[in-house]
Structures are given as structure tokens and as C-alpha cells.
Image 1 (cartoon, rainbow, N blue to C red):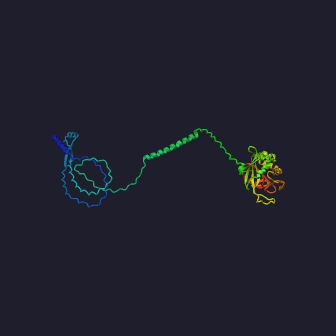
Image 2 (cartoon, one colour; image 1 turned 30 degrees about the vertical axis):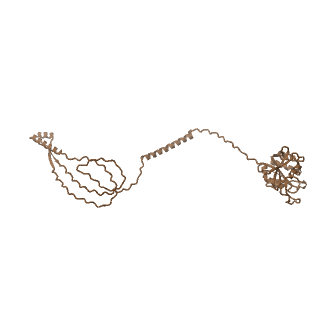
Length: 418
């Protein structure tokens, strides 16, 4: 009996297992399609919606009744315990419900396609090609509804500094530190470690001082071509000189030099003492020792002339006066020598300067001042016939002793030399 019940229970269990093992249609694995971004289509003008034809309701088949089975679950331990107690082994009843397969959903009506708006050419972006997948069983793919995306406002671009920029800034900082360290090391080496080299001796060339060209006596006087009076073969040199002097023609204020040839081969008078020696004129001994290198004799055209009554003689023409200019070495010594010569100067020079000493205006020389220069003079009896002398330093830095035959001639020589 128990075997019949076990066989029956086993048969029921096998039946339940077979019923539960009925295969239900399982959908194929779903692989999502790549979603394409909807193209930007300009908003079309509103059009009346087309009428959708009504479709009849598809009848839904009645649901099949739910089947319920009872199964008994026993264990060997429970059966042994029941047999020991003299009871009939019994299992635990477990109800099992077998649901029928779900009916297929009715197909949805296909909506008519909306009118296609005129196409607008836009730049096309080609994406990767999508692989084709099989459709789900019992389900048709739905067409995506065209949608017009609203233009989204452009968000302001925010540039985020990258890590590279920070790295560059760090490099600049390290580079600056390295430069400072190098400069500090170089300064320490230059000012502390380095042994200064001995300075090289620089030979400064001695500048060659070029003295300005010396201005000569004749350049200061500015006379024209000198007049040559040859006394090389003369027996009476003083008379021959006066004759040669008178034969020259000069305008008033004109100045000419005199070259006095005293010997053969154009031997000229080189100094005032050499000039006076040719005419056997006496002079102080110190004059020869104090005479310098330069000497010149000049004739000047007199403009200031007087009559015997002391009136200006405007009718006088071609009146010439003698001027002697000699360089001296010592100015004060020359003044002292000239002062010693004053008592006999008029007698010694009267024939050379063509003077009548009996008509002298005084017994001694008188002082005069012209352009800050002291002048000594003696008239016979007026200034157009006189002996004037002075010593002073000329503009070229040299000292000169000057003797003239009139006051006007002295002023002319002073103006030239000063």
C-alpha cells in the first residue's frame, strides 16, 4: 500500500515537473541601438493634422485558468520517526501554481507619416556606423517622432588652467632662483676669491705743444715792400742816406720800411747799433748789450705840419719822418739807458732826423702819455719836428725801444705795435 502511495506521489511530482518545464517563449537578448542625434530641422509652418482612421478593437482572448498542483515533500528522517511511532509516513504538502503563458499584446496602429518639411542643407557630421540588430519578436520598431530642439544659449567659455601652466610657473620660479644663485656666486668669486690682476701701466703720450707762430716786428708794423737805400760804396753815408730818404714819395699816413745796405753782397743793418754805426752816431754802451734780434727802420708820410708861426701848414706835401724800432731784452734797463742818453740825444741825432737844435722848446725832455704809454719828447720848436722816444711791451709780447722824428710818427708806431 505504501508502495502504491509512493508511486502515485512520484507520478504526480514528475507530472508537475514536466508541466513546469514547459518552455515559455523567451525574448531574444535586447541590444540597444545607438541613438542618433536628431537633426536640426527648422520649425515648419503649422498644418492641419491628418485624420487618423479608426481601427476596430482587437478581441482579447480569454485568460486560461490557473492550474494548481499539490506536492508532498518528505525526508528520510521524518519517515523513520513516523514508522518508529507506528504512524503512517506523511510529507509536507506544498501547493504549486502553474501560470499559463501571457497572451501576445495587440499590435499598435501605425500612425501616418507627417508631411516632410523642405530640407535645409546643414553640415553633416558622420558618426560611426551602427551595427544592425534583429527586432524583438512580436514587436515592431517604433519610428522616432520628429522633434525640433529649441536653440540653447551658448554658455560663456571658462578657460580652466591646466596642470601644464602650473608646471611652467614652477619652472619660472626655479629658473629665477637659479639665476639669483649664479649671480651671487659670480659676485662672491669676483669680489672675494678672485685675485685682482696688476693694472697695466698706461703710457700717456706727452702732448706736443705747438707754439703759436711768432709775430714779427714787420708783421706788426704792416709796412709795404721796403725801400732799399744802398750805402755800401758811400763815402758820406749820412748825406747819401738823407738824399735817398728825400727822393722817396709818400702820401700822408703812409708807412714804408727801409732796407739799409751797409756793405757788399747785400749786407744789411741788423740792429739799431749797426744802423747808427754806419752814420758814426754815438749812443750809450748799454744799448748794444740790451738790443734784441729784431730791428727795422721806417719812413712815415707826415700829415700834421706847422708853419714858422706855429700854425697848421695844410699846403705841405710829401713830408717824411724817420722811425727806428729795436727789440730790447730788458725793458727797465732800456728805459734807464735811454734816460742816461737824454742830455746828448738831440745833438747825436739832429742830422739823422734833420733837426735844428737851436730851436729847441726846452732844455730837457718832457713827459707825454698816449694809450697808457709814457713818452719822452723834445720839440724843435713844434711837434712836427721833434725827438720822441719810449720803451714798452708790444702785442706780440716783446719789448721795443722806439725813436721817431715827430709826435704824429710816434703815435702811428704805438698804434701799430700796441
